[in-house]
Length: 149
Image (cartoon, rainbow, N blue to C red; front, side, top):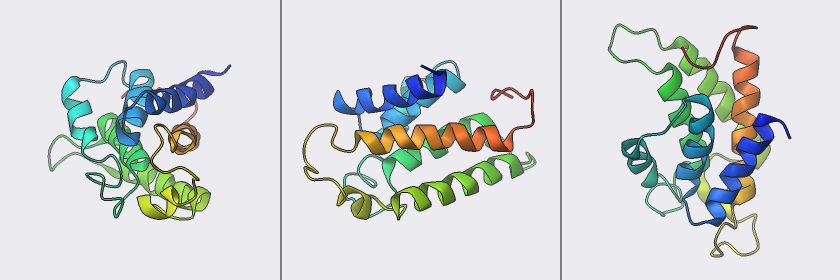
């Protein structure tokens, strides 16, 4: 199994264990791409679960978790920092996610599943989001460039 596949599968596994979509994507992709994920980052991600605080009205938490990983990799640390790479990656990620699921909002995606209150019901979304993240990173990064920079 390729590392991308096992990382995506880990996101689904974490969701079935009770992690929010945002936490699961951040943890699975972050552990691979960042080396580790701090407890503070998990706390930040937690409130994005369920379309922001469980409202299901905003951005899907899985997408939010993937965006956080990109921010940790390429986001700016000061106003002078060039964030063009991060923006390019997130723009492609968002477009690909919307094409895959028909929306970037939680509720329309959630409605595609039979048991929206069962633990881990949305695990396929987390798994697919991690796969999309890896695809987009592979497309944007130049050959030989590492994900950590």
